[in-house]
Length: 181
Image (cartoon, rainbow, N blue to C red; front, side):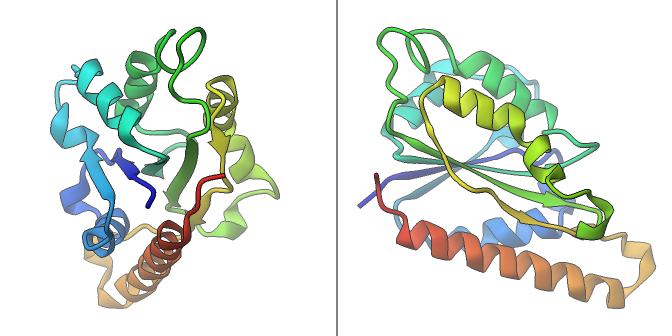
């Protein structure tokens, strides 16, 4: 059975609707380790050894995060910069080869706000990093319209929850059926 590592990179998961719903749905999945980067490293001082040990055990790495202003949250960028080092993630002695990586992202705006292929362009840094580290880059799972402002009323919450629950179900199904190449 594959070992799966999910890196949660949400700057405020407690006040999230979408990402919190997705993570809650995954809490019962076997062989899944969830590492909340913001909770672990509120000062951005990432424990490189701990993160590399977690990566070494994983067959599949899932990056779960909201896309803010067309980018990944700063904690995830810091994680990439510190953890994916020469001799570990790439180059001589790399242990990343043959692992897979999946971006599971939420976007606040509706899909119609984005041009064709825009999600793929937004995720190019992750795909390029995966290619450089010889990871198997998997087709991302994305949900749009995952944005809720509490003062706008309960009616606005229903479609956000429905979209987050559908995202969680799709991700859970993917994890359950994941097979190593």
